[in-house]
Image 1 (tube, one colour):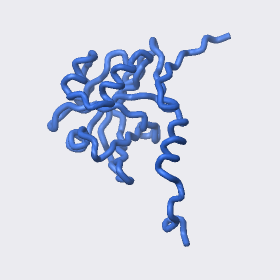
Image 2 (tube, helix red, strand yellow):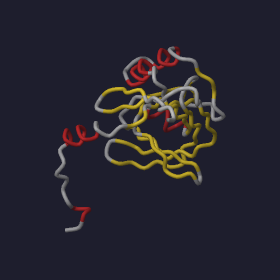
Image 3 (cartoon, rainbow, N blue to C red):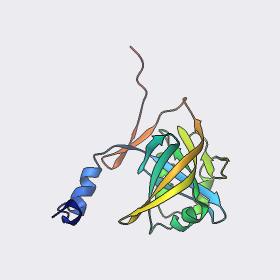
Image 4 (cartoon, rainbow, N blue to C red):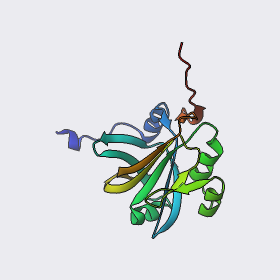
Length: 171
C-alpha cells in the first residue's frame, strides 16, 4: 500500500485543535474588480518564493467572497497591526461587505484592490495559479507591489485568540 491510499487516522477536531497551537499573522485579504469589492480575514497566508515574489492564500470555496476573488484574479494581503482586532472580527464574520469597508481607511493598489491604511505590510498581487485541496483553494499570488509600515507592530492569532507582537528593544 503506498501513501496515496493510506486512510487518514487524524480526526478533524484533533487537527483543528493542534492547528490552534500554530501561530500566524492575521491578514485581511481584499479584492476589487469586475466582480466587485470583497474582503475576508485570513491567517492561512505564507511566503512561497522570492523569485518571483509569491505568496499563497487559502480560501474556502464555500465562502461568500469566493466567486468575487475567483473572477477578479487579483488581491491585496493586508497584514494587520496590533489594535486591528475589531476589524479582523468584522471581516471574519457575516457583516455585509459595504459595512466592512466603511470601518477603516483604504487606499487603492495598482491592481485596484483595497489597501488598508495602517497595515504592517500590504502585498498587491495577481493570482497566478489556483490549486484545490479538500474544501479550500490555494491561491498562488505573484506580488506586483508592496507597502511597509515600520511604525507599528503586528498581530498574531494563536490558541484561538489575538496576541499583539511587540518589537523588543535592543540591549
